[in-house]
Length: 268
Image 1: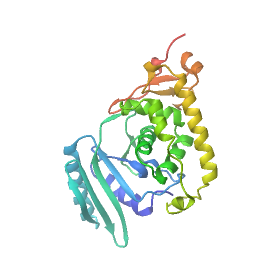
Image 2: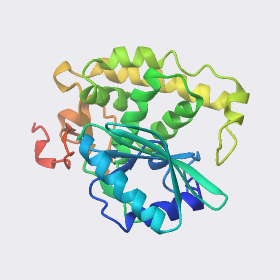
Image 3: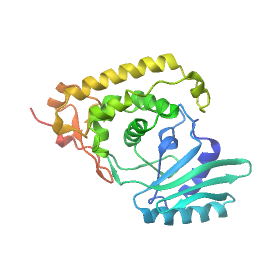
Image 4: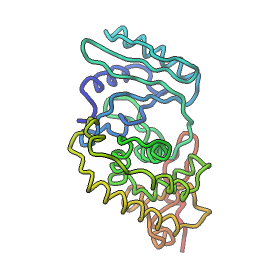
C-alpha cells in the first residue's frame, strides 16, 4: 500500500475542507493506489494560481492544527510553501505549490475525497522530470507509467504539448542518458517489492527503441497530442492504421484539461 496509513489519514482530514483549490500530484499521486510500487515520503499539492497557494495553505494549516497535527513551516515564498506535518511519532513533508492549469485531462476525485491530477498527466510530468534530473526514483516511476499508463513513446509525443521547448526526439535524447544506476541506489528507496535492475534495463532499452520508432512515424502537425482509443477506453500509442481508420482519436490539452471527444476521429 504505497500511501502510508499516516498519509491516508492526513489526506482524508484535508478532504473534509474545501478541495477544489488544490490537487495532489507528484509521487504520492502517481502511487496512490494500493497496487503501486513505490512509497513517497511527501505529499505535493498544486494550485492553479499563486494566490491560491497562500489561501489554501492557511486554511489547511488551521484545519490540521485543530485536528491535533503540528505544522512546521520549512520554507515559504510566493507560490510555494513546504512544511512538515506531524502527529505523535509520525510525520510527512507536505508542499503547497503553484503550477500551470494546462493539462490534458480534468482532475479526478480520489477515494479519500480529494482531487488528483489525472494518471496520464502524472505520467507526462514524470517523463519531463526524468529528462531534467537523474534520480533512481524517477526511473522506477517512468517504468511504472510505461507499463501501466502509456508507453514511453506516447508520453514523449504528448509531453511537448506541455513543454513546447522540446521536440519529441530532443526529449527522447535526454531520456536515453538515463538508466545507468547501481543496485544500492534502489536499495535506498522505499519500494513495495524488490527492484530487478537487469530486467528494468532490458525494459528501458526496448521502451526507448519503440519510442523512437513511434515518434518518427507520426506527422509533425500532431506533435503534442495524446491518442484516445474509445474501443479500449484509454490512451494508447497507436499504429498509423489505428489513427487513419479512426480507431485512435487525437487529444490535445487545454487549461483545466478536456475529456476526449470521439467526434474528433478522422473519417476515411
